[in-house]
Length: 125
Image (cartoon, rainbow, N blue to C red; front, side, top):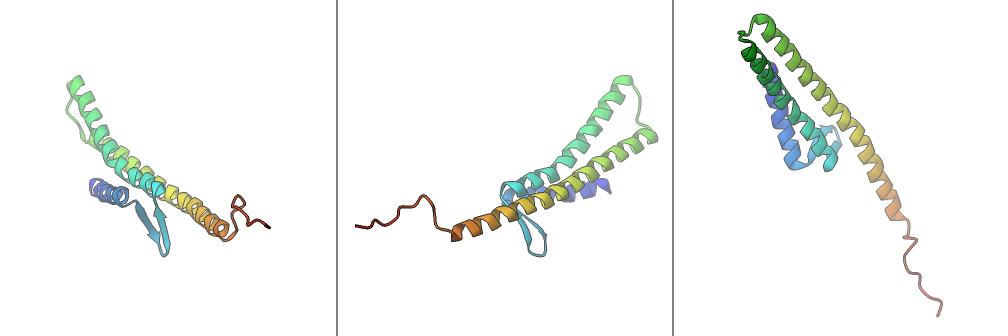
């Protein structure tokens, strides 16, 4: 269950990384570097989960033990925690980045209506 959810988030993260665009619902769209950071956060949990499994396998193998149900349950809990934290962090960051992007876009729209203070003025001659 967690692996399937991680795979879906991974695919979504790759799509966001490639497109540079993340839809947040209704008319909210995150673009550019902010979207790519959120896409990267979507890719991270699969790698961390697999790394945790490899580390557990190496530790158990080095000690000569076979994994028990308790070890598998602990690994599943860790993997679920990694997935949950990255999922929440992805969408919290997306919300914060969207607010920053909106302020920046609103500022650019307001600033574009005003004349450029450094522009040349016509001479009185």
